[in-house]
Image 1 (tube, rainbow, N blue to C red):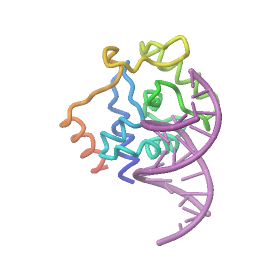
Image 2: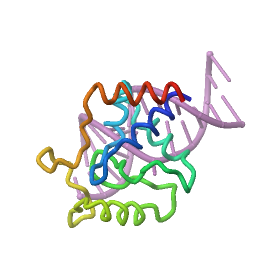
Image 3: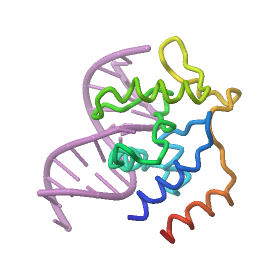
Image 4: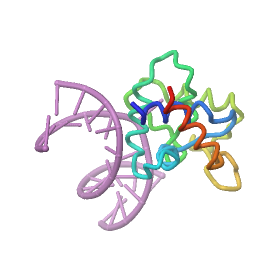
Length: 119
DNA sequence: ACAATGACATAAG
DNA sequence: GCTTATGCCATTG
């Protein structure tokens, strides 16, 4: 599964203190409308995975985990541990000035995708 | 190949 | 701001 591997590889490369939206991940994977697929990939992750899935949120800066029980609190805690500021409504500021969105360089993304492709 | 599902995104009310 | 409806992509039966 290239797509899943790419998603995992990309998410793994998200630096601490930064987050990424499903749509953004899909964009980096050359699938601008593949946000759902990204969510599916993260959903397929095991419990003790080394992928920082908590750094992936929806476009509204909110936690979308609906199937996973209590994953919301989990993400909130994990992100707080990463110095990620939350709004009063429990949302993350995805403003450009906030700099919370991880914006990797094209070559970096290319490298990551290439690595995922190799296995 | 078709139909159904899902940790999404966007537009309209 | 929240709910409803539509579109999108990958996976599964």
